[in-house]
Length: 91
Image (cartoon, rainbow, N blue to C red):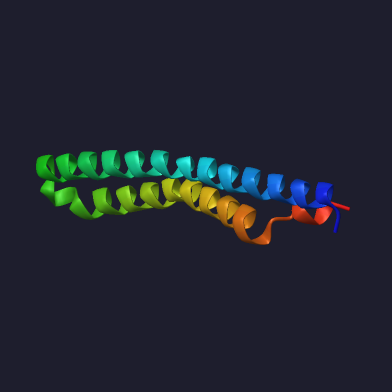
């Protein structure tokens, strides 16, 4: 293995680690959104306790949809860290 190949692999691994860290910033949005939804859900149940079932169901559905963004970010980070398809491009 020559030096340029080793340097190229090191550069790709470093950039992949930075990219994985940046991808995990995608977890901030779902966390904020779910906290906001839970707060508004609690407010709504406080105002209309008889509609608690509908409110909770709607809130949980919204939280599940919001969480997909964070899961996608996690998958991208794991691919960059462990599968790393970019290293195979070096020749």
